[in-house]
Length: 202
Image (cartoon, rainbow, N blue to C red; front, side, top):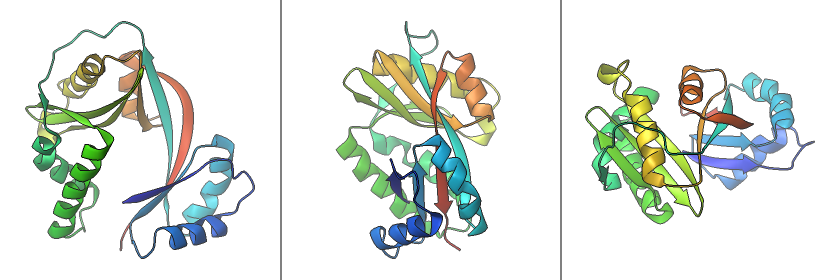
């Protein structure tokens, strides 16, 4: 998946954005347009949905303050999360061919190396995070279906906050969804909202 982030284009229309995505992202079938202005995203949403794109409203949340208590999970090389990342991708893209899923996992590893992504691994889940100076971002948290409902997701998030050791840590969740409620219970506060529009293969 390739993202195109839109900032400051308050009057641009859906047709223009789709055309720009087609030009900039080439022949890729799976792509996402991110709109960081909440009002512009709300205005664009009906048009993207009419074209068959999936629309999401995401809440960016911030944790600041003392490190939260909880278990510590070991930090591992990013590649050690591959099997779980493949499982996650299969569940999100059930029609994707196995070769495509595996290729995506390898591309993620190359990108992670360039970005400096770090990984924590648990029995049944993982968390990926990045540190940028005094701020950190928890980029991914995944728990297998069998391990859900026992607090592992929250434990991975708090462990990532402690491992990052930053003055403030950010995480993103579907606005109004279960993950957002979990992060709020862990001490994260919403700071801004973003709209994403995704076109998947098929």
